Image (tube, rainbow, N blue to C red; front, side, top):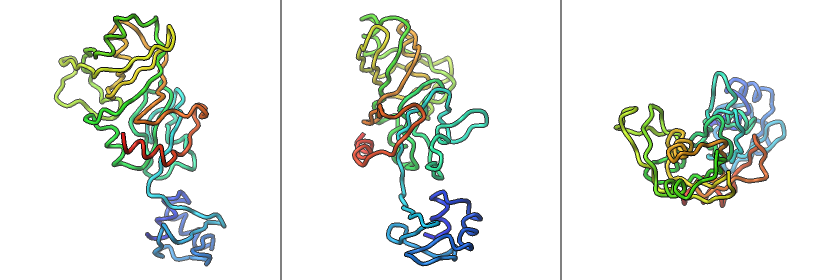
Length: 251
């Protein structure tokens, strides 16, 4: 890999800023000052330092974010703060959220630059688990619980699916789709754990509405084998462990 590309991908700066840093002698390769932006390096074995700080290259990065309300699940937005902006200096080039949570929905969101893994996790054919803690308007009746567990009929809407996929072949207002069977655990009169295996637009809200209830608050606490780290405050994030990354690949 070219040295200037290596430095740019690790957020040292733009290509022009990187070249300026090189000219100033701020970069060393294997202990020697390097000023040639086109120098070829082995990104995995050569020791590159910027202003004395050792830089470590990784092809893919994986972060768990506890998404706060009011933040948009996007890489950029003209009017609102985005989940990528919450990563600060760790927001490497090409990093993106895997799927989307509504602006008012909180909880577990995966951010990565691993496009292949993201595609597999979001594929409608794979039915990856998504677990939500749902605050509801009134206690869930046995009939409502059975309805959710068996699947409910919901009218198609003219939006993409919540997790970033469109539902081909359906016209808005003309088609009804039946949700896959869900798992329901009642935590209290006004709170349930709901596990779904799809990612339709506003799916949880629409499912509760379909059985005659209403969502008051929604937090995702699980996704593809990942469990939200309760030590993360809203807006905080951490890198995934190797075991957590493995669990995503298995999912």
